[in-house]
Length: 344
Image 1 (spheres, rainbow, N blue to C red):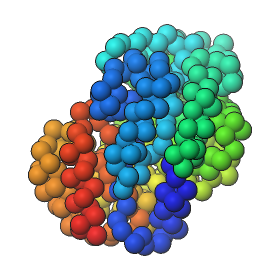
Image 2: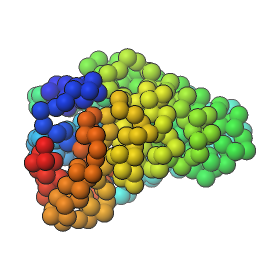
Image 3: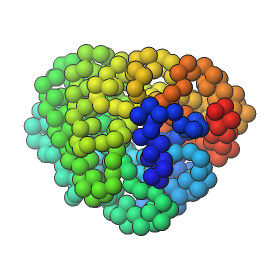
């Protein structure tokens, strides 16, 4: 991310009206390898392939902001691997982390991982360290510390259905687990900041908050997510939840979020009403059915509809409702960005 792009984000959070509408997308391994023409496994295992894919995206679409920018990750295996989860890899699909908790009694024996030594986390950092000079040569900087959210990590450590049952049947044990995960997440984010002092923002991703009811959201999500966003002083606190968001969105400000990426199933007007006027909204074109599967003309039509149907166009980064999905073409992204610019 360039300093100019970072300033645009800060200005949006501050409520300043940009000269032109801002477009941006969360991009990572579901989209980049296929679009770049490499396998998912090569993208993860080759520093050069990872760098070239991100570089190509930035150079192909200079008029949009890619978030978080040069995201060093190993899919959903990143944080669970630090807890000892078995990671299963495939050539052209995302990896999978197997659960390590079969009984919540095991939580008492769970240790808080060390982000500098455990799992895939040292490789995440080393990839960035190795290529930081080339990132800087492109006038970009590492601006975000990134982590999966506490419920998301918990769901991989014990299974989503088991986590949901735990909310109801063994809440004390779930709190113990979330306490360990939250302590780890804070250490992980602070470690990224320690290694890359130029980091000024936090990106947290947690779709599981979209599967729970309001009492569970207030009890098991809000306090832990809020604590994680307070890991260090930040100017940008970006939260991604592209699952159902009507329950969690009223708590967005309480959690400390100032940029919110949400599900395409909710209109921008609907989320604005729940989130309030002070939160920057990142969305909200349907990612799969329109951005990936539509023609460029269909993308243009749906983009115009989205823009014209949005009542309050302040504090918006025009995007899709979630991260960039697989199979989105260069032509469709270009159609989206050009359409938004023409409407502005």
